[in-house]
Image (tube, rainbow, N blue to C red; front, side, top):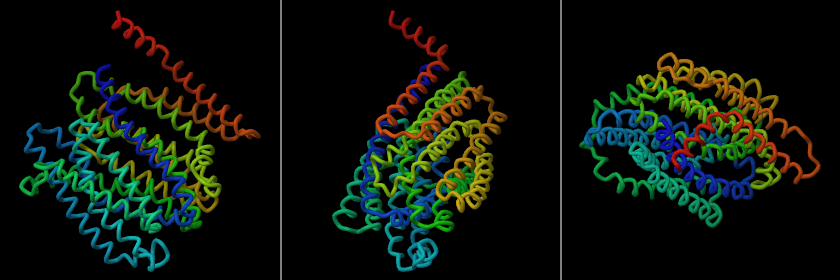
Length: 481
């Protein structure tokens, strides 16, 4: 078990290093954006980004998940090439179709989403990036299934770096405004499409395309399509609701808060990228269930600590990285950090249903959560604005892992220690809330007090795991001698 956990930790750390580097670049762009774009303009960026995120989800059709599952079914190289070629070629064709439709009807989209058909030019670059973004995503998944985390992070990090460079060039030097952000993404993904073709030479070919394989993969991913739509509705429709009930300035404030909270996704994202291939690779191990349970416990403690820290230090982070007009986003950051925490739990929970190649419970869970988030958005946003939307997202997101754990345990029982994890989440959240509600007259005292609370949480983690840490310590001593 220890060896397997070390493997997962090693892969997660490598992905995490990449995430930290990408996240630092993202943090660097926050003050860049907030000093160039007003909250209203940032709201427009958020609405367009949200819309194309949905279209991207529909274009992939859940075939990335299918590719992972089929890759491990057969060690034959030709069969594996068939899986990736079928996925890549089908998604490319679908992306081209979506792109043409959006360009054709862009004035209508612009009028509906932005309130003016004259802004239809803002849809050109995002439409093109639908096509240019396919192969970079495919090659990243190709690295992951081959358990090459270093290659994955090198590729994604340099793609992010080029995107940032192009963004600064187009927005700051060429003065393209909002269009510069999406133009930078298109140019960057085009460059890395060429690199992806070079990297996967011999893997992507029409001769490997298989209609029967596509049918089988689509059959597996079919429940994931409405689930993907539900995921989008659950996590990305805030911009539409806030714009309808409030205004685009409020959308921009929400988006900045969400952007800061997304820094936490460098941890959940690193774990997710390492977890999928790792979890499937040990399915047949005798102690697989015990390993899954231990991963859940370790993840629970770590992510509860991180979420509480984001909740506590959100105001200070906004003071550091943004301008005063964005300081109101602090509660959004804190609330959405917990949303990301529960998304991470969903990655673990889904293993119980994925082992038997059934994904319908995930679709059902997302459907329930989507209904809840829509209802809560309608009820909470008129009164509480962006904070109400963040709460709606969080409450609905909790439903997903709860339902998946419930169904997964019936399908494939794993001895999870739910009580310990729930307790630590509640205790740490209470500490975080206490820190936010105490008024301080001195900024330095405020920061020092929060740092002490963070140290207290670390002490609690050690105390809760004292017996296990003692066992690890004794094993380490034995190895030394």
